[in-house]
Amino acid sequence: MPITQNEAEQIANQIAPIVDQHNFRGMNALLRQLRPAMRIKKKPSNWADIINLKDFMMPIHNHFNGATYSQVDQFLMMFGKQYVKRI
Image (cartoon, rainbow, N blue to C red):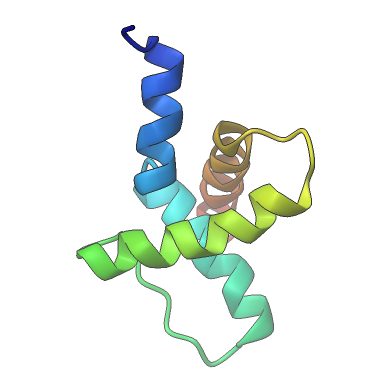
């Protein structure tokens, strides 16, 4: 039985999140609140950056019952876009 597009996206998101400079920046901005001396990269540049984003997003996703992985990703993207406007 073939899987649907939605199921394919969910599987892909479990392996690695959709990474763009905005959700990556949002993650770094939130982490910097906890670690002020942390250097923030503007955009992801290697596989470790993707894994770090996934490792950051999973506990958030698991904490908010009912929130989809896509909603967490969208929040980080919007937060990252607004964050860049403030700096």
